[in-house]
Length: 635
Image (cartoon, rainbow, N blue to C red):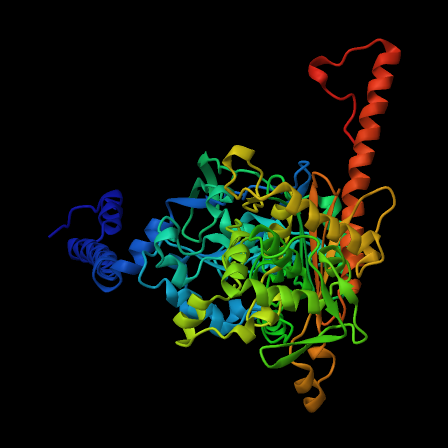
């Protein structure tokens, strides 16, 4: 049997084609791989969805919110504080504050943040916890007035601590060396107690408000309105772009009645002495100068005072935070005698010719009352009694008047009541009377207590501001204007009037003129070509018997007072100086002299400048539109 010939090409073609079973197995493997990959991807997506929607919805929700629009605060600057001539006393300067964005903050970050910024960790933690009940978007100010080192820390750790937000803020810049500290006061972050008070209802946690002095009294006027900057941030809190800006509104400027020239001289005249100086215009009640010593630096309060600095102030036994001008309630000593003299004349108890004889003391109500001049003053009338400050004269006059007459004219002059000055926490002092003693001590007033009050001792206490207002109102003839720190029209100033007899006022003023210019106790206040009138006062802190028995030192020496005004007719300035433990009123007289001189020196400079301007304009044949000055007048 013969086989057919083999076709070699056909055999080759058959050998190249794989079997059908191998092709099916390969395709099934590819499908399986695809299915496994699909399942893995699906499981990965399911797990991500689980974490996002079930396990950590709040965390990822917050992260999503972070990658959105945020409102960044733009603090509104407080208004400036100016003196009576428009010169800036308090201004703002630009600084940086650091906020903590609570929606992205982590508890474990607080300690390293506190270490890096030199903050107390406990204080930082407390600040954060105080706002824990508020919405997460409410930020917390953790540090103000950042130093270059603080700024470097924030910049270099931005990726580690995205919750740190840096903003530019205006901060108060106060005069150096504590000048006007008690008048101006200071600002600080609003406290929890203030937030609960009705007057602070419109303010929020973290707002900076006035805490003391003018800053507190006129907080609503000075306070600016914050603006906002809307920005887009990523999930790390980094600002990507700005969408809109609402500008901050600056607070209103406030013009005080303070004359910086007079104030500066008053500060220098007090020097390191403890006490106070008050200068008033008795024709309007405007406060020209107010000094209290010791003082403090309000710049330390402008941000957030350090604990160490606060302890130094709070623990100081001389109480530097006390505004002695309106809060020191002390016996006025012989500065009260002009009021006693006026009461004697007005009630008809005496006339200007009535005399007493001083031999160094006088026996009244079974007690021997000593005069400050042990040798005695001899026979004294009203004029001599005031000039030489004879205690015997006023002991006797006080006994004739009685306590209620003294209280009536003391009350008329403003003793025993606040003046109403636009500064917080003013004290009222005390003008004793029969009713006062019965009401407070449930016992009657004894006549033997009156002579001490008549020389400014006993239960009588006044503040330096009260004394300045009282003597100023007497000097202008019976008009006691309410003292005020902020400029206002005269018809807006409250005034208490009493129709004093012009001749009686003249008699008292004549005696006060003699104190300074006729060899009286206040010769150190004399000024050439100026009729200065005044009255010294030396007020005991304890009886002589007690001082001898206790061996008390300098801290129990008598307080020295002097009150002066000028000119004699139609006075335009009255000044009170209190020199604590100054021993004798004559040592306070020089302070008053320097302040009065500063006032009239400035007035003379301005007058001379105006005359020179007038002569210059006349010589050139020019007219200044609206009477405007060619150049600013000198201060």
